Each structure stands twice: as C-alpha cells, then as structure tokens.
Image (tube, rainbow, N blue to C red; front, side, top):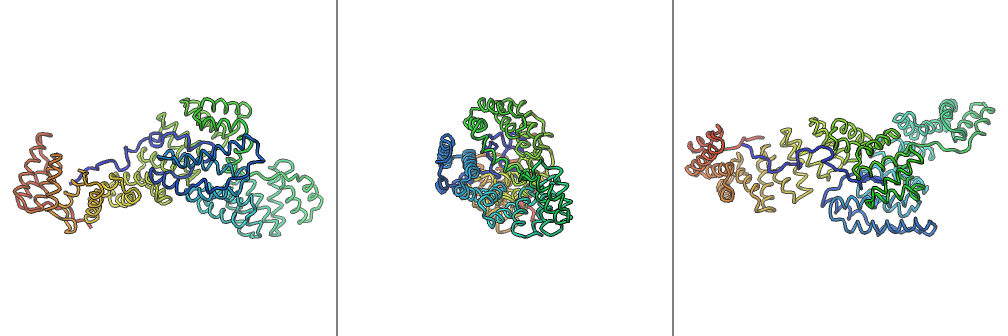
Length: 582
C-alpha cells in the first residue's frame, strides 16, 4: 500500500557533475571562494546578517598610487551595492565573494584594522571555513599579537588538524614563547604530513638547539642546509649548533654564509594573498577585472601576455582556464587546468574545475577522480564535497555518497541541498526512518518547502510513525490548504492507521470525497473506499472499490490481487489497516 513520492526529494534524479553545479565563475576567481554553499533565501539572509561593509573602517589610502586608491574606492562601493541588492542565491554568493576579495586586499596592503573587522564577519558567515581562521592567524602574526595568533592557529587546526602551513606557524609561535614540547609536536606533525617541508625540519632543528641537544640540531640543520640556497638563515642556526658541539672553525664558516634568506613555506593561501601585490597592480589585475566585468576575451589576451613572460605561474594558468571556459574553448581550458596541476598538484580549485569540464564532456570516471582529489585537498569546502557525493551516487556508490553527505550535514547542519540529497538517497536505499530524520530537519530549515513536508510525511507513513505522520500532514495542510497531494495522503492515513492517534474515519471520508471530486483518479477512488470502510460505511466502500476495479480494468485489462483482496475485506465488513510497526 504505497503512495509514490509526490516530487523527487532532491530535485532531478542525481544529475551529472556539471548539471548539478554548473560552472560558476564567481566562486573560483582570484579571491578564495567561500567554503560553504549558500542556500537560496536562507543564504541571502545569512549574507546580509553577517556582512556589513559600513562596519569595516575605511583605511587611509593617501600613500597609495592613484589608480590603486581608485580601485579600493570602486571595489568598496561595489561591495556595498551588491550586498544591498542581492536577490537570489547567485547574487548573494557573488556579494560575499566580493566582500572577501576586498577583505584580502586590506590584509595584503596591511590595513590591519579593516582586515580584522571583515575577517571577523567572514568567520561569522562561514564558521566552518578554514581559510578565514588562517587569514586571521596571518593578521595577528603580522601585528605581533601572539596571543590572538595562537588562538587563530588553534581555531584553524580545529577545522583542519593536519594543515602543514598552520602547524609550522603554530610551532613558530610556541617556540617563541618557550613551549618546546608543544612546538616540537607541531613541527613533527608538519614534517610527518609533508616530509619534504624544509620549514618543518628547520623548526625541529631550532627546537633541538633550544633544548640543548646540539648534536641532534647539527644533524637536522646540516642535512637541511644542503637543500637551501646560498645565504639561507639555516646557516646561522647551524653555526650556533656547531659552536655548541665544540667545532668553532666550522661554526664561523657557516655563520659567515648567513644572509638572512628565509626558509620558504609551501603555503597556497599565503600565495593567494600575495597575488594582490605586484601582479594586481599590473597585467594580472587588469585580467581579473576584465573577467569579472564579463570581458573574457580581453582577460584571455592579458593572461596569455603573462604566460609569454613566464609559463610557470599556477594562478595565471588557472584563471586563463576559467576565462577560456566562459568563451567556450573547453579544449584549451583543459590544457591550462592540467598545466596548473602539473605545477601544483594540490590546487583544489583546478581539480574541481577540471572535474566539471570532464563531466560536461561525458568523461565521468575521470571527472569523479578529480572531484575526489579536490575534496581530499580541502575537506572543509562543502560544495566540493557535495559534488563528490553526487558523483558517487551517479556512479552507483550509494553507500559512499550517503557517508559523505552525513559528514557534510554534520559539519554544516544548515546546508539544505546536502540534506535534500541525503534524504533522496536514503529513500532510494529503503531507509524511510533515516530519511525522515533528514526531511524533518529540512522542514525546520525551509518551512515553505512543500515537497519536503510531503515527503517527510510519506517517510513517516512508511516507517510506521503514524502519529508523527499525522502531525506533519496537519501542519502542511494548515500551510498549504489547497494542496491535493497533502489532503490525499492525510485521508489515507486517517483511514488505515493501526493506532488510534492517527485514525479518524469520518474526517478521512470528508477529505477523500473532496479529492475525488477534484480528481477522480484510481488511487483517489481507492482511498475513498478505505475511508468509507474506516467509517463503517461498508456498502459504500464496496461500491467505490468496484468502481476503482472497473477503472483499473479499463486502463490495464486486468485487476491486481491486492485490489481484489481489499474488495473482499470490505464485503466481510472489515476496514483496511496498515502494518502496526514499532
């Protein structure tokens, strides 16, 4: 005794990767994209509630070049207008990304007061997004606020425990405060996660030196010095370690070589921030601004000008690919995305956009592999993980998709599309009770989502939660009194419930008669027969069931055993009852 889902719980039947997310240029431009998807109305409300450009102090721009000053003023005005005018999900996401872009400009140009306020707002908007905690760490480190820097490092590591740049920066902070054991643990975890990291090994060498274990420091720093350019600061610490072990001649030789050249940290977010420097004031900035204005042909020409000077810039290859996608040149876009990945294999956005391209070309297996890699690189980027879950479902890996979606909603309980997708998979997997939990949360998040309310009631019905099902349908009927499907399901529930709290034959008859008068379909006639039997009106129930059987014979040429058995039941003056599940 099943009623079909009125609508697909998750919209269309799990579309391919490209159809699911599209190719949103705004989300993957020069500034980092927000690490969580914005739901429609809720997303607009969250953006407006969290981001207030008027609360961000306007910095003194007088020392900047005139064109840079003008750009700051124009971009701030754009942020203000887009935040005010956002009317749909895409516009809200674009407004949030424009705000984030301006925030990172402030941070790069060392407008620390403005950067502090806007970073605080971005963390409120996207509390699960690692990048904003990390940028706060860079801010506090730059201003010398070590206590706040440590707090930001802790927040960043809570979100991404194994992030190597954060562990190295946390180790530096701990070492500066003399917390040698904690510093060694941080550097050790960084070295374990990225054994080739010179900065992590440099930290371990400095800790050994501070501990008084000069012999160990010499071993670590000597091996490290062989990999570093001339004049590296590692020479100073190696010299100090050699002096401590009683080798003054070698110590003097190493100390003389030190020219304070720092140890480089492979740090994608820091590199992204640096793009607001030299490049922004030259060709790269004009290319980015052209792309944002929709002039992708101009952007392509500018990016190619940059590549003619140096073909090894990851972000130029990536941004060129984005503009080539917009101009329809998918083949060259793929070439530049692959080149970006050759230069930096952990470029998550390049993996993601390549997955979208490959999905559009029907190369689903390869697309899924790049989606998997993108989500591995940035596990806090929930839109990427949502796309990975959909790709798994498309490939038939339903259990893997369900696991992924459950982790996503645990990270962001308000992510509506993830709950819709999870509920749809659970319905298909024959788990109505688990699907009902997700749909119940979805109804709370989106009270005007009629499909969610209806499908929640249907799952409760199928799970035997009859009293809960009645409450859900009554609430839906109160909100959508004219909806035929809601009235039909409520009539059937009230007619066949095995528990008194959801049984009401007289009201079931009233609802079912109205439904049949509007739409005399086979299922509706059967529901009316069930309701009449529940009200003790068995002769009428028999007549209506016979009418339903005649309609079925006209349509299919035969009658189902189930419908004939119901006729026999009513002739025996017995109502139909659903299973009494626990």
